[in-house]
Image (cartoon, rainbow, N blue to C red; front, side, top):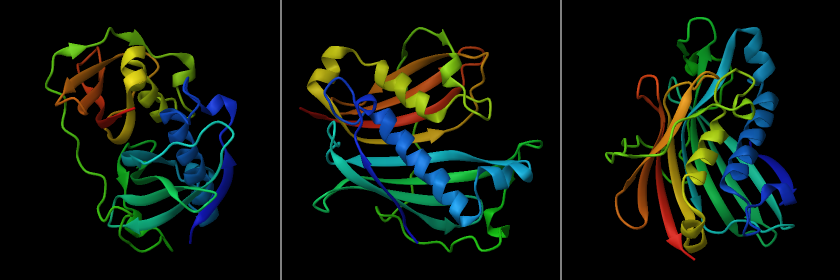
Length: 242
């Protein structure tokens, strides 16, 4: 069963070029995922009663075209079931003519808030059965960047912390996008990104972005924690010229 929202690109969703920003693209996917999980009976409030919460583990997004300011589009999502621990969910952004603008596949985990252990989704009653992704594969493991190029460490900010008291997943995307200068963004547009969310960022953390330019269009990035040098997330970015 698919869940759909009919949306339009509001002024605060856009970047300086008047198109849906990468971070708000993510927030819209996150929001509709929460909505649909509630409908299916596996939402935030239900899991909270069991001292459990959803954690996004992996995400793969492919962007053909980003909706412009004021443009109407449909965002649809559906659960693809589980193979044990991971719960899989896909997304389509579709314009008024039925053309697919953006597609994504995601992998989620349920974690026990007290023990921090992963809960087997296969043990949930009535969880959807496993189906193939829109890409014919699930999001994959991303390598850590090998470059020593790293931005300066800055503290986690108040608005970067979510309701679970962890660094908000969408804010990682903003940190990575902000690590590129204006000149780069004027010449390049994000065509694809794949992210592994590895460790919890906390309000006391200081974070920086590390990059490896594999070639002109393919980059590896991570958000690094100063205290232990750990990668909190790793991202593979594919850029195209504009």
